[in-house]
Length: 367
Ligand SMILES: NC(=O)c1ccc[n+]([C@@H]2O[C@H](COP(=O)([O-])OP(=O)(O)OC[C@H]3O[C@@H](n4cnc5c(N)ncnc54)[C@H](OP(=O)(O)O)[C@@H]3O)[C@@H](O)[C@H]2O)c1
Image (cartoon, rainbow, N blue to C red; front, top):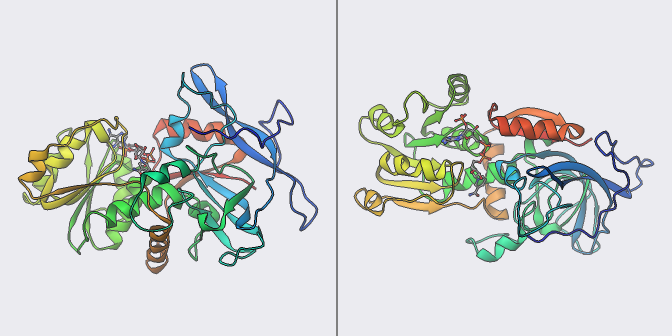
């Protein structure tokens, strides 16, 4: 991981109750709060620090961030890493805010526009390239959990009409990953069966998108009450995988042996086997997550005997993002925000994410 340490200035040791930078009306702020990693027993924890607001280059925009969203991957950075020191690395891949300044050569983004960042700084369109990996906000690049952000004009996307900043902040990672999982493997048809695992960020978006496309969505979850929530969001059936650990059999029963035309696998190692088992003939497996580990195996024979395919998903491009936003606007969808914390309570938000007791997304409000 490439950690940029040079820009921030630690102004005080006790940042937990830090207030946002105060500016005269209209004057650009000179400092910004940032959520960064600091060493803690057993790895890292989040802390607030203050840095200078970077200067806006000719092809860049300055965003006043209103809300940011947490992702499961943010938790991975809390683990100890004997190879690198991540202290000072800015957290987060998802932010929403208002453009308050643009560089001299920027024509496509305007002051006052409501925008989100993209997950990849450099994947604008076309197929995935491993070169994109150098430009991931919050991991290979510093993240976006900051009051003010300077980004390339090509790394922002307008917020769909009707969404709040808190809702829009959930789109860059979980929203777009779910959109790619639902649209890239197989063209969904009305009545197709889609299997979604769990009720976290990616899966809840996938449920909403697939249901809006007319699919029959089956959701697995660890909790009866979460399944009720999933049904209210448009799922047709819910399976509690604690009560029915062989949920692939239940999917086949529920669908009169047809199986699922699309399975969106976020479980990884422990779920891939059943994901293949419950695929329908000519079905599609979207390989998305690694909640139980990314080093899982897929049965080649399992796919072969069904003429099925497996498609790896890595978030998506800016062009995919815009297509998703058009769909969200056309279908009047609203991301499921389980809880919004003020920025100062970022450590409570992390604990809530770790608890798994939520449906959809967890957001921090900056202002
Ligand atoms: N490939 C990509 O581009 C991409 C992008 C984003 C995320 N991801 C990965 O996708 C996974 C999910 O991310 P997320 O942000 O949606 O996570 P999240 O919001 O933290 O959701 C986690 C939820 O998944 C469910 N779950 C946990 N263990 C499970 C298991 N063994 N089997 C089935 N469901 C399980 C739980 O819901 P219930 O209690 O309802 O079961 C849990 O609340 C993570 O591994 C993440 O790293 C990949």
